[in-house]
Length: 159
Image 1 (cartoon, rainbow, N blue to C red):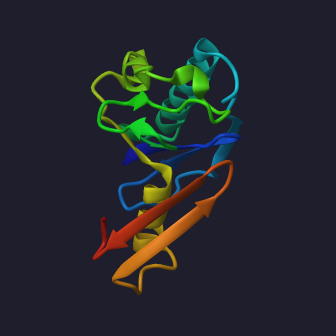
Image 2 (spheres, rainbow, N blue to C red; image 1 turned 90 degrees about the vertical axis):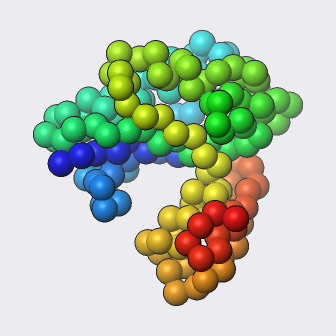
């Protein structure tokens, strides 16, 4: 069985889950301190440790890791994996840092795809495919947490 490691990076917590190909949780969601107000090296070490541990859990479950997806708050260059946050009290130390390159350089990531997307967008997409938004063609979701975000889905696709 293949497993996908997913991370939801928030300002206070990072949540990690292993998902099957059909989006089932393979184990309970794990929570970690985000350490978003610390220095660059500390934040990157924390993210790397969470990814390394998660991929190790997949192996322990007898699964083949198939990829890593990270929901990250914005502003963020999702295609390139570069944080653009500053002056908001979380992840300021990552401004301009290629977070994607730091994670891709991990030995456990060799050959695995890594994707970043906006956290609110992914939350909305998940609700449309697996939650309360399934019955609707158009869905808007607003997230209020450490920050504020929104997602829009039309006909099952992010808008």
